Length: 168
Image (cartoon, rainbow, N blue to C red; front, side, top):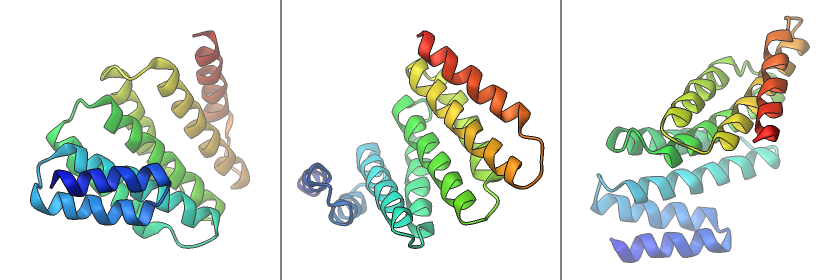
């Protein structure tokens, strides 16, 4: 199983996300409870989702796989700041993609904010959390503005998060 995981790492190093997913899935099939395999799978799937979205392709499958892998890993290691960071980032990217495609990103963005707060309490670097919180509020504020809802609360929160991150 370690050899499969190493192959996944090598594929990630090359930016070959499809190959990385393949190897991490293979590694995971041997040990369902090993967090690094799930974390690698989540990273690679998130990168595939972002790539598909940037090309205008459907990224749903990859976002779902990335978030499912994050959730499975967090079930085994619930206080992992790195897993919480990865899940938060994946959620706000998913929210951004949903908003760009005209779909309501509210659920993904609300979960991103909840997860970012968990990451803060788990000890993830404050600047990273504040950046993710600010980005999430920005995306949600823009969505609300475009849909004739008051974005003020989100935009003020985004500004406050980014300002605090810059202070640190």
